[in-house]
Amino acid sequence: MALSVQEIEQAKQSFPVLKHDNFLSNHLTLPVYAALYKKKTSNGVTLDSCIQTGVDTPGLQFGMVVGDEECYTLFKDIFYPIIKDYHGNFDPATESHADHVRESVGVVDVKPLDTKYVKSVRVRAGRSISGFPFPPSCTRAQRREVESIIVGTLKNLDQDLAGSYHSMESMEPSEINRLTQEHILFSNLSDFSFRNDGLARDWPDARGIMMNKEQDFFVWVNEGDHMRIISMQSGGDLKTCFETWKQGEKQLETAMLNAGYKFAWNKKLGFLCARASNIGTSMRCSVHVRLPNLSAHPQFEEILKKLGVAKRGNHGEYRSSTEPELFDISNIKKLGISEVEIVQQVHESVTKLIEMEQQLEEGKPLQF
Image 1: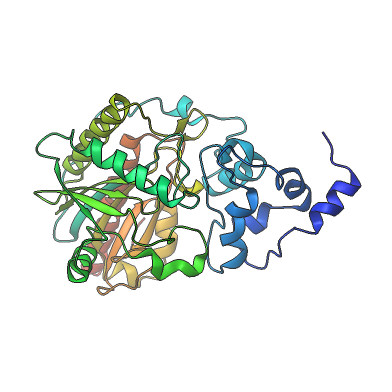
Image 2 (image 1 turned 135 degrees about the vertical axis):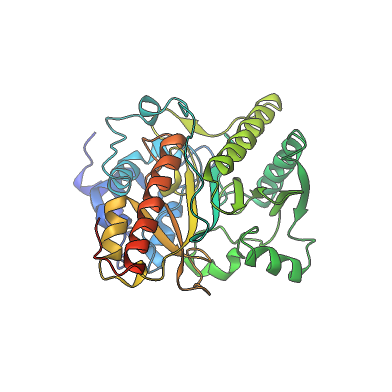
């Protein structure tokens, strides 16, 4: 139903000043806002609570968070265009993630990467518990209930994956710092509370980590999502790293179902998380690789773009690298692609980057 002039004018009184360049400002128009701003999900999440971080904070690429799984359908008039723009023209208005990927079909069949260049490999993905508000919108009681549910399901992991749960509230600061520096534990989100995204509220209440004995499988609780399931290994064996991750993810899903819960998922968008940049498979497959010569080449950024991968410093998105020649290379695409395809694409891309690094080491002209 078309909005009246009066309704548009009324909405104009609440329409935000979009002064930052991000996906939100590129797509949020007054008519779209007017049609959505009075709506609420069953958890009470509004459009304004989702977009406030992008209104307030410069430098955020996406400009929105997601309060709960209903937001993706109730506010689809803003989410769908942004998702299409961000996820490489995958259009949820006409496509379904499930039609592209019903399951991770096939087996990862890749050789270990060259450890002269590769320091470590990691596979991680976010998962949300259906029916609960996501971390930007949950209450303290809901956050604590989510923690309790997850800690209960972790007890069902096989012995090689199982470990002890450590609440950040009871951990010593020195231990938190050590695990963060070793890329095992997440950063203190209160350091980024300026983003006004709701993730740092009550920090570190009901946040924690489960680590297995070998420290190659972890589950983060109530960081950016209800849980992040992570497998990490030194060296270049991406195949084993993925297989460990997949084993843990399936065991946790089964334990959730047996306890009467399920992961938030829909056919259109796959697994649903607190950021629309992190849906579909929600998988980030990454390799820490040394590229001293290639990273200094003027075409480095162009090469990464052509390969369809992104780079970070070795301490993540928000921290400067202490080893400037070491890069965290990962997939960009997560939606409309299978987990197996992601791992194979990252492996192929890193292999090509290493080949180009070797070309430059030998003084040869770069070919790509």
